[in-house]
Image 1 (tube, rainbow, N blue to C red):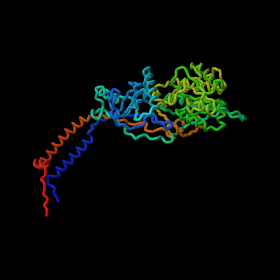
Image 2 (cartoon, helix red, strand yellow):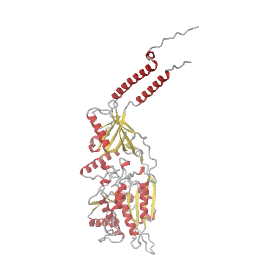
Image 3 (cartoon, rainbow, N blue to C red):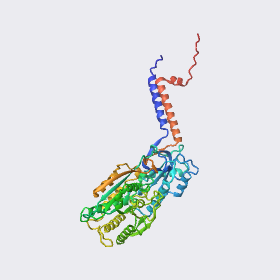
Image 4 (cartoon, helix red, strand yellow):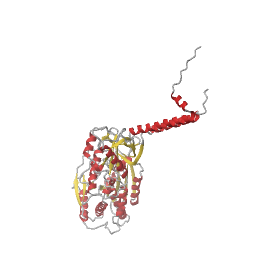
Length: 559
């Protein structure tokens, strides 16, 4: 057995240390420095009857570039960083329509669209809002085969973007050869959301029935859809569509609970309040809620008023109906709202649109009532029916663009007209909910709920069965109603949704390969000198030379 020489130990330990150091350096050959970390929100991924839409991937690990990339550049491993402020929408549409290979897209949204922004809006912001709405409308109806994310502007990411633009303009875009910035999102690939749940909440305020009256009291329904849909589910708060309608319904419920709490002022109408889900999906939740009614309840409903997008108007609201304006209840509702509107300085218009029973598309919530043979109308600031996934809580529908005063006036309009009908004061200039009285509309209540809704994304497929927000709505109605029912239904199978709606983006500053090679050359030279020094000092120069000398061949002796 060979014996180890006394000087072998220190030399071997030195060699092992050097080898370990070499492996560490090779592993870190791509020298990176973390530039910043930001929250990003993925473009929604969904299918309609098996047809794919939205962003189909989630993971990112590519270099960053701006729209100033050189013509003919290979972008298959590049993420384009596009500030919405500088967006050329026509260019983006053409680029995506051509389905050119691309590593991913990152859109930077102005802070005014974030939950926490308290910036005031102006003409410039309104222009940005329109651009965001057009961009979103295009993205959600397009099948995009790579990751698409949204993030909000901040000082760190603006500094990174300035460097990226500078490099692109100088003709040195980020690549493995030149270095630059690398964007990394480490997340699992999206999975289907199994059996998404829609939760409907029903509140009941019974009217006062006369002694010995065998007839059922008539019922008036006040309804609002609370869920949203937008390009980025984790940002879809829908402050106006339809947060404003939800807030108005809650305040109307509070006001009438005060009236109905006293037998002397309890009206001879039952009041049915409904907070429905599935609004963006042809009001699927409303359909299932109405289908659950028994025949007796359905027959007692005189009419329903649906509240939709009533938080950003100036002086005009619209009543949308499916039944002819000559219908007694439609005429009565319109006249009641118009008379109160005249007193409040609100112009109320009427829009009639027949429904096509054979068409599954439902543009307004009242149309589901009409399909179940219940008279209904929708009160909205929108003069025309929105298209599929339009005005359902888009990226630009944030709290900054909701007018609290408009919501207050909408509440006064609906509550006052309902009260005059219930108590037989039509045509009389009597203010039941006068500003200085005990039944005045509460601006603080409206403000607090608007603030909550403007911070709470509410895309139904991503809400749990007992989601805290849904439970908060149920609890609030229980404060004012005698009976509250929570109904959970499964969203119809025509829609399929995928998870991975939010992630963390790491932005790394990456050195070029040329720098890496030079660094390795310098370090390699240093290690060779260090190794030679250690051998010479421990074993002598001859042993160092012998390491590089070819050993003499040995002749094999044969017997």
